[in-house]
Amino acid sequence: MNTKEFQFLSNISELTTKEIDISELCSELKKIFSEYISFQNLSLYIFDDVTNTLRNCADNWCVIDDKDDAYEAFENLKEHDFVINKKAYKLPPQLGDIKIKITSFAIPLVKGEKVFGLIKIDFNNEEALSIFALQVMKIFAAEISLKIQNIVLNEQSKINVDFHDSMKNIAKIIETQYELNYIVPLIGEMLDRFISDHLIYVFLKQDENFNLVWPKACNDTRIYEILSKLNNDTEYLMTSDNKIGAFPLMSDGEITGCIVARSTLDSLSKRDISYLEQLTRQSAITINRANTYSKVLQYATLDALTNLNNRRQFEVRLGQEIATTKRQKNPLCAMMIDIDFFKKVNDTYGHASGDIVLRTVAQIIKEHLRESDIPSRYGGEEFAILLPFTHIEEAQIVGERLRKAVEETPVCLDKMNINVTISMGLAELDSNESGEDLFKRADKALYEAKESGRNRVCIDKNAKP
Image (cartoon, rainbow, N blue to C red; front, top):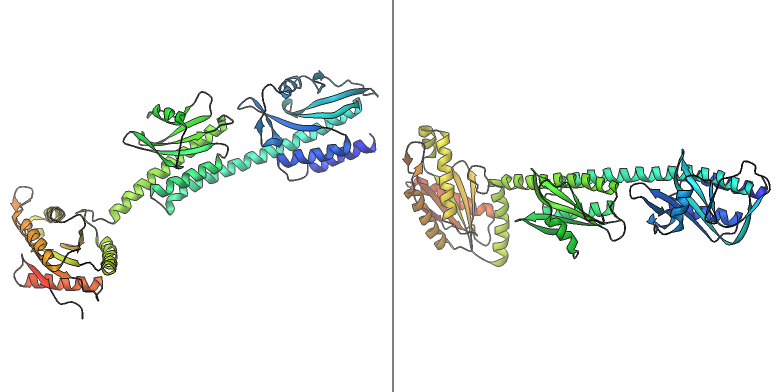
């Protein structure tokens, strides 16, 4: 082995110890070869077992045309040591000083006894290489084979890490968000980053139609065609060229949406499909949990018995209405209601009957208010109501109508009907007072209504000084 060949193999060995990706490996190989021999082009191809294609490692793993002579070389290298000038050769047992005139040659990349790719070199001019030089090429190819296997393994490990990170991040979205119009774009972005070679679309189903939620537009009619073929038993659907895949989002056996992956280049591989199936399942779980959490939050703002706002939500709405009223200089009235002798109802008929009374009164309240009014169960048998855009005289008319409706509506208990009445206090917001002060005055008026005989409406007209 002469000094030049020794230096070549030494440089290759040093290269294999570096932490580099496949693109950097190809670039470094070209530099080393340029010092060893004059060449026109060096290409490194890996065979993809999933898609049965050769991919150019230096060109972002691009699939090469099946008419390229690299395919024929790859097949020949399964039985031979080299492909020289497009012809297959085995290395002779005796090296000797024989030289071969070469314009191109290909060397197999081998894992165990399996050829998984090739290195193809084209020369500027016809080169005369000795059999010994070709043996050096075999040593070089063996070292590079091991390096490529390590790089591919590391890149696959990174993909697996990214996949699990994507799964985890999709699952974690609902720790901070539960609104679908917020979390679905997040899911779309996460999927798009992971499946970077394909465009991702997220659809949600409503009234038997698939509505695009992310991104903003989809102009590929084939996507809508494949969506129309989905049913509750579909695992996933692919177009005939495997470039579009539809993966249903499921909840309790029903399709609630769909994630679609589309490519204008490569088809979806079995590995891509597997990843998308799992990511879709996690996305469905996240979306379903978000829906559940949204309902929980809804009920957290509503009183479970009466379905009116609970006290916490009432205080939130009170703050909002006070701010709006003062900013727009509109009138606002507050109404406090108490069911008369409610304790007696519980003691006489039981708490279950008391619940029926509460629900009945709450229903009457909702039926006799405008949509802009804000009724709440304040606690126990008390109700608090906000009447925006309402002066005290108008509030009194509403109050009397409501009081009369409760008085005249029988409450249906198990085996009998009973009648209940309510007492009510009203107050109108003064420009200088707070929401708390407003309801203190309404509560004071309620106390007056109860003290003066119940089943009546009283008004507190004294604003905060």
